[in-house]
Image (cartoon, rainbow, N blue to C red; front, side, top):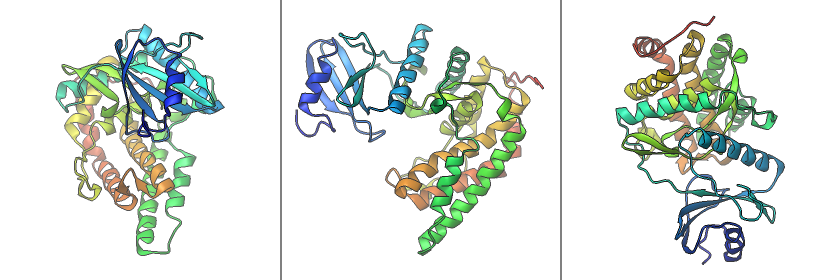
Length: 352
């Protein structure tokens, strides 16, 4: 095992894997991508294929990991498609703590990536509703895990930080974009608050329901991946984020070339799938487009405020794209709302 093993040393791997009964190991390889602060290793043995993750020790990290595992175990007991969590031999636990680190080992599930089909899009909306139903009464008493992108002080803080530098032309452009995004974010938050957001039931949500976190088998959901973002929040935050993730159009390398519009057909397909399982009241329905604007802005500003970029993309160009898409939703709000309400499949109940 060479230094290419993505922050895992040979001795570390030997020690960690000795705590699991996964048979004879044939191959190990780093898995790149995702959160760079959480190194991952693919393990192939005579008993299958596994994914090993290492997290830093600490109260918050441990709390989040314990909670995420409890959620996955609950879902697995109810036959929801999640990955199997390997159990340590000595402590019979899904969490291994060694040398100021937390380790977790998952089995791999075979499947194909999201193909954009109508069937797969409806399926992802439907399964999100099932996810919410199964976890509607699952308790979360830790304040660390109660948060959302809506009306967020942290998001506003990042927007102010992005717009604080006025020393160069590009910085001035960034300030203009940040101010525009702040106005869009604030107006959307006000609209959602007026729809009684604070009175909505908080429950466990996935927090990152997007195409990269799921695999399919013949357009049916085979497995949901990555529970790192599970938290307690109103279910509509999860639904709005899913609607955005499955309708956003951005398949070109440079965000400056991404179109303003969303894929309206996929947006409606995703929502119709959700509403096959769960009915929405009028306030919940009316909040969704505003929540989509909020989640799009909140998700973009954190990495840009921290690093000046979004992945390997220019921070300025990326935020300009976010600005255009958010403004497109705002401009087309009435048209999109009408299209949503005209869907015969929606079982909208006015609970007010």
